[in-house]
Image 1 (cartoon, rainbow, N blue to C red):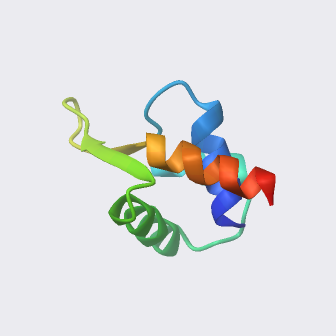
Image 2 (image 1 turned 30 degrees about the vertical axis):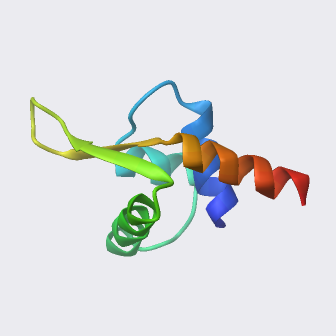
Length: 77
């Protein structure tokens, strides 16, 4: 699993995704807790935006403009 793989999942989605949905789409054996930490790191880098849902107060993520630009950079390399 690479940063490009994760950003691509978010770019293909039409809005916010729960971390477990992304983990399922990536089909990786990465530990759930490690993956949650990884998404938080991407949010701190400005590549993902996070918010809490109103219904169950879970954190969901979506790609930012900076994340889209980074994905374009990966594709050009």
